[in-house]
Amino acid sequence: MIRVIIVEDEPAIARGLALLITQNHADFQVIALAKNGKEGLTKILEEKPDLVFVDIHMPVMDGLDMIREIRDNGFFPRCVILTGYAEFEYAQTAIRLGVSDYLLKPILPSTLQEILLSCRQEHQAKHRALQAEYLQRCLGHAVAPPEKDNPLSGCACTLLLLLSGPICSNVYNEALIPSEPLCVDPKVIGELEIRYQLSLFPLRGRHYNEYILAAVYPRQRAVDLEGLSEALYHRFPRTDACLNLTISDTATDGQGIYELSRDLYLQVLFTNPYGFGQIRTCSPLPNQKIQVSPEIKQICSAIPGHAGQEVLFDFLHSMFLYWQKEKVTQFQLTADLRYFISTVIHDSACSSLLCPDAAEMISSCSCYAQLEQELKCELERIYHFNTQGVPASQQSLARQVRNWLDTNFTSHITFKVFQDIFGHNEKYIAVLFKAEFGISPSKYIGELRLDMAKKLMQSNPDILLKDVAEMVGFTDAFYFSRVFKSHEGISPSHYVKNLKGT
Image (cartoon, rainbow, N blue to C red):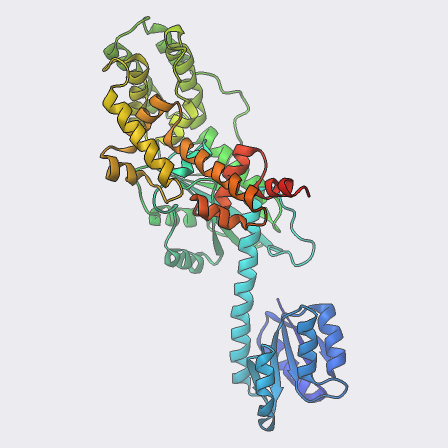
């Protein structure tokens, strides 16, 4: 509802204008009438309307003085001047006060209609911006809706999580990302809003391969969420990775949105089959504890000691055939792969080597074929199937990559950089880099960026955090803050407060 106050010393004009507004525009509410500027000022500062109609010449305090006082009090509603033809000399003063709308007396309904339409569009844009800001904050942590001016009052909210590939478990994966995060053409969003009669808010997920869309609609209205999800799923840009869309439960009046997002991620981990795309609605999560699959235990126990490459790869392939056939979840896959790594790879002969991290490997691969190839590369590295240690040429390449990263870590680095500069894909280089330095390139970049960020904040505690993010290579201050907190245990803002001793 758009709240209106009319300040006019002629009662007939004030009542007539109020009638024109309320009879023809149901979303406008005239909440008060005032007969002079002083009375109008008091009511406006008390009621905080969205729109004010004000006459110029009135007793006690004229309209322009009233507008000036309103501005001086830090309140900026949209103001429409009620004026006659002879009063246009006041236009310059009104413009300086930020007034751009005029309504000539006698009032024409068509002119009033244009002003109200413009005001409605402006109000909707402001309200939408407040809703988007509130929704984005809710994804980061539990937020209680404001008692007054709740942007989602009377609304229902359902989250749609689109995930291209697996859930990423490592914040450093964001150091090496495609050129742009996942997104949908705004025209498609607009079409879906019209078709399904709701508002859609694209929100930043935790990682670049996530796209969260908040569907907001009147809570009493039935909405075809499955139809919306189908339409969105089939209009979403495709990549090599499988695409999953998960529909959350529904929150009302802006409450419980953080819990919706948390349950969405748990739903994907515990119920979505890894490597397969689908649309599904949130359902109760399984209560039982995830155990290692008996079939995987059986395969691992059958692997002979000191197995050669061909034998080990055959057993490995049989595990992947089982996982694909059973359509195991990402969480189950992680438990099984950790078991394989701990029982087969992590033996006494390899205890001095850096063993792969199951969760990191799974989250960095978009499909089973890629994951199997990644694990084979790790086995070759650990058991030296193809070489006696890392050849000097490969050591040289790993050092070249590190030297390049030391110089260019603040630039926008994507997967494509490795192929363009070094002639090898990122998977090959990551294996060499990790074998040589004991850390993945993405983690190395992350540590370089965070180290520089801390030095910048230490040397200038008053620096803007968004400037720090840009200077060290993060394209989004939101991601910088999350990565920093994950690594340091506190947010950048708290880090700066500690530096200042406040």
